[in-house]
Length: 214
Image (tube, rainbow, N blue to C red; front, side):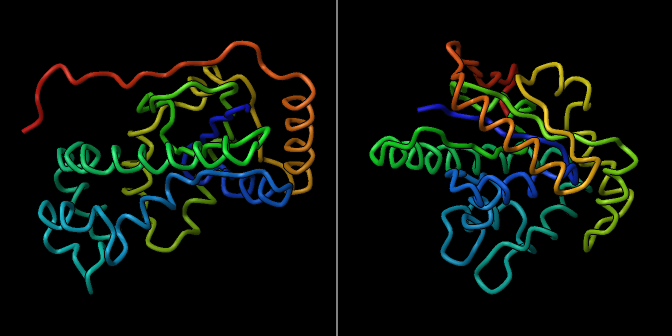
């Protein structure tokens, strides 16, 4: 089974690529959707995150917008929340891969926004980076509800530059053109991966913190 790591910065069109993959019946593990489930009412991360950001608890669920605002004011919160959430996401990813092997899937995609930034542990047959020019990225981001220039800048500082991501990719999809063009790129990518499987995996290991977190 081929394991494809899919990543990309904010507003580069990664969701469109995922939609196209799912239309082709490719199983996709969505890390961000998993976080939404962990933050939802009854989610495993609710109590832990609420303890760090009490105002984020609304009707038994975590309000991500309030968490984002809190992180803007106190950046140290991000690593504390990640220390709670990342192991839970990893567990769900493990369950997804176990299901994929049981059902004999030939190729699966792990959609992980900060795959390269966090060196998300795992072995990947391919690392696919979705990208587009910065001007288009910013224009798309500003259309999002609740997005501000300050928030966009903060998110960008947490992510690798496009040039660095492309350097580390084994395959790149550029969404600057039309959706039809992106669909053509996705089809070409799947054709290449299925007809010429990678013989060497890319192994990522999470970097250890040099100092303990408070």
